[in-house]
Structure formats: C-alpha cells, structure tokens
Length: 85
Image 1 (cartoon, rainbow, N blue to C red):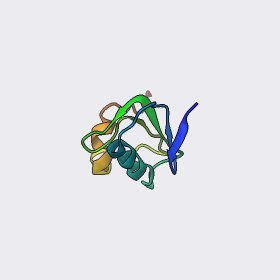
Image 2: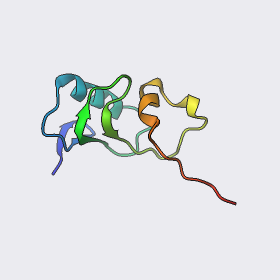
Image 3: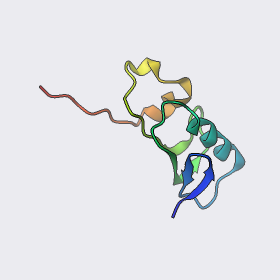
Image 4: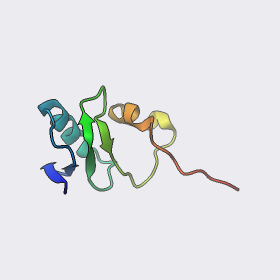
C-alpha cells in the first residue's frame, strides 16, 4: 500500500531522501495535475522533476514547449495518444 508522504503525494518507495520528498511535494502543487502524484519504488531526486514520479493531467499541453520547466525532463517519457484519421 502507498503512503501519503505529503499533500497529494502517494509513495510506493520504502526509502526517500528529503530532497526527493520536497521536490515531489512542490510538483504536486502544480495546477495542471489531475489527481495525486505517485512515486514509484525507485523514485529519486532529478534535475527539474523527480525521477520515478507519475502524474496525470486533464489535457496534454500543446505545444510541448508550453510544459512548465519543472516537468520538461519528466515529460520525455510520456506518451500522448495518437490520432488516426
């Protein structure tokens, strides 16, 4: 079961350092989030965004350059739905 380590932050990690916890808590306060921020078991501090964090948004910002700077490094691994037609 996850632990709520900060408001809107659920963690599946057994060990987290203070920098990682603070970084995740700051990201969880961003207005683009739809729900909580989840930290995976291997979560750790990253340059700009917490490595091993997962967020959900209501919409995908477009263009990509409009992403807040704090999320750009984390967004490299996100997949936007494809449109066929």
